[in-house]
Length: 171
Image (cartoon, rainbow, N blue to C red; front, side, top):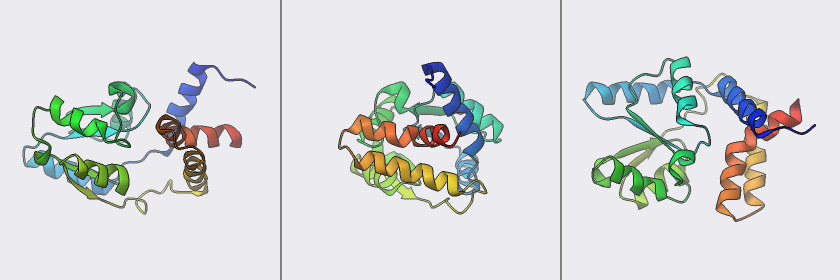
């Protein structure tokens, strides 16, 4: 059948709630940064609302994040690099003073570095017990959808909604 916008948003929240886990590597880095007195922010191309991200953090015992910048909230993306300059401006600091840590080479490392950020990549794919056939199918579906069109917003939607799409076809 057809789904309303609210139903789709709720399915996305529920799906992420089941699939998202805390990366112990990232969380260790977060705690270390806080011990050093650093500001910790989260930058994501997620389409959820910040309240939903805070709830996920709470669910997984993630403490110490000072602020969240989401593409869905600020209208800029890591995928096209626009969010990085925005974050530096909002944080009132030079981009070279920011260390961005992420798991995607293109969006988290290359694009951040092109905007003057220091950036490193971590591979946390082996940490999660939730890494499964389902997640592999979701990632594959998103990559197929993204490669089908060069439009940025289509690609972002494919990446963000890939899991939602897979959940709907598996149900």
